Length: 219
Image (cartoon, rainbow, N blue to C red; front, side, top):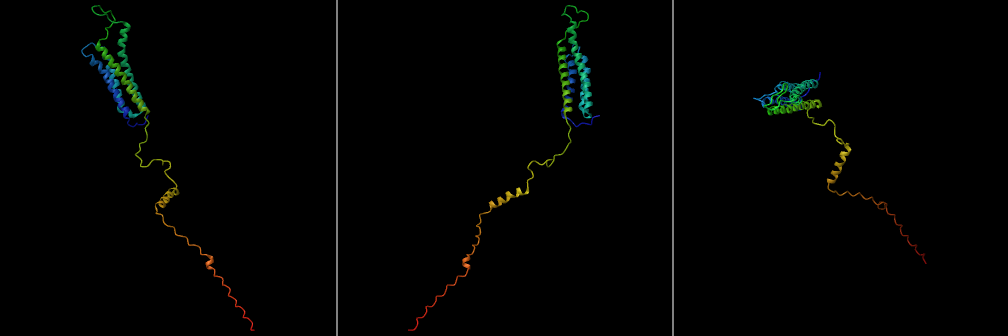
């Protein structure tokens, strides 16, 4: 047995729409031919059965896809049976022949031609029956294509970090240091002390004292 499904708004509305169309397709011919001879009255039973099946699908489709497919199949068979009942009347008239216009007598086994109200009722039944069948199938298809996922709340942070989220600390610090240096005003650089002239430190060589001239000999 399938697990209970989550709510599917598209499928639910499709089944409700199919139920309404099947109801209109069954009751429409009765209203159109009210007060006249109506040979389409027999379709109301299968069309209302199909409407009930689609309404049950709209309420109980969460029980599983297999259950939904089974109930839709039963409702589809009911609509198909109603359409066959409707289309059998003009086919039978076309094969067996219809009664001639008055005042001629009608032969045994022949039927009268469809009246205008019966033709209108036939059109309503075929149109709404086909739409109900297709709409229910669309709801079933949407239910089968729906993939339930785990319900999770909105996450404050992504499950995976985006590319380039983390950068090396050194790479982040370098631009800041460069910016700090750019923002500082140009400061005069302290002059390096000049190396003392080694010549200045060296004591000056003592100049040789002048030699006294020798005194002349006494004469």
